[in-house]
Length: 377
Image 1 (cartoon, rainbow, N blue to C red):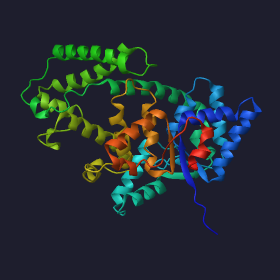
Image 2: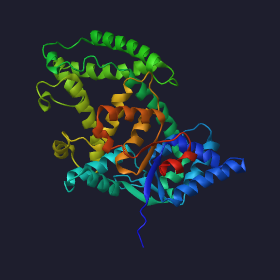
Image 3: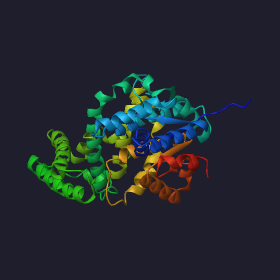
Image 4: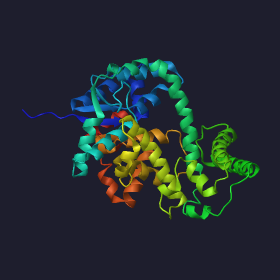
């Protein structure tokens, strides 16, 4: 008897939401259609994969009755896989846990091909059963305020990230060596000018649902200002101040590092530091092995970011879209939204090598297309 292997699929949250709505529809024909599609998927050994980012998006809908139907739909699935929390807790995992699994595999140095590393990562990443077996997910009602807050915060983050100018990214940081620290008043004025500029960019390019553009821009600028002002009080040079506001020293980077290179490296080290900490490791001992290695999830997300730069507006869902896409190297199918699909298709044209990491990408406009699309018909 041949061994039946499960096939793992992560489905975009908006598709899951519509599927759940139809599964609990007042119309019997609609309910039957939703059930038939699920039966077909399960018959072909497809196992839905759920992450925290799915749960977060599904439970932050303002109508609790709709959320109730969504969670009933997920809990009724006979079997699912979920992202395992790297710290061993009963929380459902997120992109940070994906990175932690990737780091574990990379540090083991046991695998000599991308395919073997991806399979090993998947083994570390997935846990199986019924979603109701995760204690924290049964408390979804208590998690709703957190999810709603995170949704609003993601609108701000995605909008600011999309609006920020990178005109100085190619400037060597060494040009700051001869510059004197700004006085308190000079820094405050510069902060206000930046807030005004960002406000207009948020209006022009931010998420359409974002409100209070001025307050969001001012809050962001004030945080940067407080860092610069605090570091400048001891009379250090602008060069030193720039490094220290990110928690680094000049001797930790090459002499010819540019502003853009520094921002990327500092941001990357900070983000991966969270995953490293979850593994119970010290970043100082691990970082030399990671500094010049790009995790597969990083490559996928970077490809999306490079394509998204030309988008007219940001969307608050951009962050979770990225996080779902990070699963592509490890699953048999990942259903993404139209925007993410187009961004990655553009990336393939620029860099054909990305194809090896996004081969599981699937696009559907409705859940009832899944059986035929997954069967290649």
